[in-house]
Image (cartoon, rainbow, N blue to C red; front, side, top):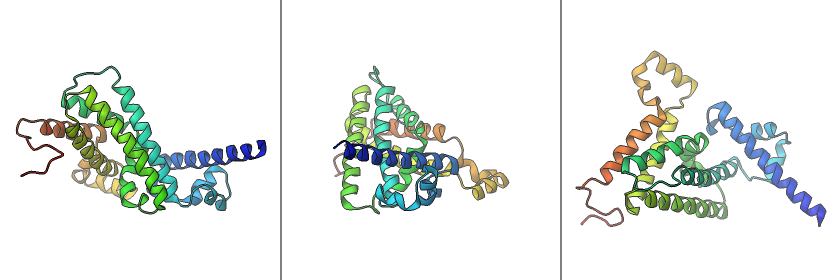
Length: 225
C-alpha cells in the first residue's frame, strides 16, 4: 500500500513538473503556440516517451493549464474585490481587466481553448474542463454581481465580451518576431499591438457602461421582439 501511494505521489509530481515546464516555456518563447511536447519533456527532465503516461497530447496538457487558469482567475478576482460594494459598471469592468491582465498564460490560452484545445481531447476530458471552467465562471459572475451595481445578466454579457477581447488583444500585443520587426518599420500597423491592459480596460469599461445605459432595455437573457 505504501509503495502504491509513493508511486501515485511520484506520478502526480511528474505531471506537475510537466505543467511547470510548459508554463516556463510559454513565458520564455512568447506563448503556448511555440510549445512542443518534446521541449516540455526535456525541460522537465523526462524521457520524451514518458509524457504519454501523464497527458495524451499537448492539447490535453495545455487544457489542464487553461482549466487551472479559470480557478486562479476566480480566486484572484474574489480576493481583489473582497469588501467591495456598489461598484459602478466602469469599476466592475476595471476589476475584470486588471485580474485578467495579471494572468498572462491564461490570457494566451483563451485564444487556443476554443480554437483547438477542447476539441482535440477525449469527451470525458472535455466534459471535465467544461464542468470546472463553468463552475469558476459562475463564481466570478456571482462575485461581480454581489460587489457591483450591474445585474447578473449584464455581468454575464460583460464576461463574454471580456473573454473575446482578451483572446484577440493578447495575441495582437504579443506579435511574432517577424511582425514585431514589421511594426518597427510601419508603426501605424502596430498601434493595436500596444498597451494590452490599458486598451482592454477602456474597451471593457465602454462595454459595461453601454450595457447599463438607459436605452439598453432588451434583457440579456431574452431575445428581442
